[in-house]
Amino acid sequence: LALYKIQDKFRNEPRAKSGLLRGREFSMKDLYSFHLTEDDFLDFYERVKAAYLSVYRRCGLNAIIAAASGGVFTTKHSHEFQVPTPAGEDKIYIDRKTGEVMNKEIVPEVEQENEDKYEIVKSIEVGNIFPLECRFSNAFDLKAQGADGKILDIIMGCYGIGPSRVMGSIVEVHHDERGMMWPKAVAPYHVHVVSLTSKDEAVNSRIEDSVNSLMEDLETADVEVLWDDREGVSAGEKFADADLIGIPLRLVVSAKSLADGSVEWKER
Image (cartoon, rainbow, N blue to C red):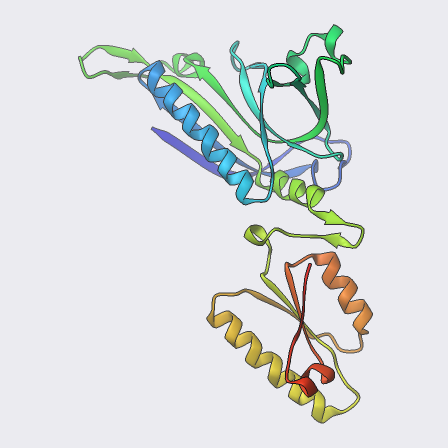
């Protein structure tokens, strides 16, 4: 049995830090699994590993699985999903001989500055998974009957992804000096339409009709569109805001493009 929930959580931070990565309020997806045998648990654990990596890669994040200590929940090792970036709060240690990846807590303190042995990389933790064994099921006297009729302890696992932290990680990895650069799979919109007004009201009317037709065609094709139709805002300001927001494709409709029977386009 596997049960999950997604909810907002809160931490008692004196102040928000690390930009979008560590605020007082955050979103969390928690998954718990329940098993009758160790083999079944291990099989599910590996399936979750693969599923999490798929999620991160679809979000444009090259996540790495790092071995970690079990912490307060279990004596066994757990696993973290770390995204390498200079903006990272964590460090991962990659053994130069074996390729094994570990977080800082399970590297011996005397070796934590040994760059001959380890490649040391700054990173952001975007998820973790760990075995709970029977710690919590035994605490609640939670058991089940096996196929042979015997009463069995229930083995548990815990798996977490922070959707809001993933979003912050995407911004830290995909940006330049002008703003965000959303990967297509997670962009808030697919296309950013910018209309540039003219001093001629008749031309403005044609621009508006052209944009409405364009947006209708795009939305019919299931392309989500954001339209910057602000008046009294210069072209430079609109383009700068488009770069800042970082939607993958910008389409510009103006008097010039109408005269050419075209639409200007630019990938972010």
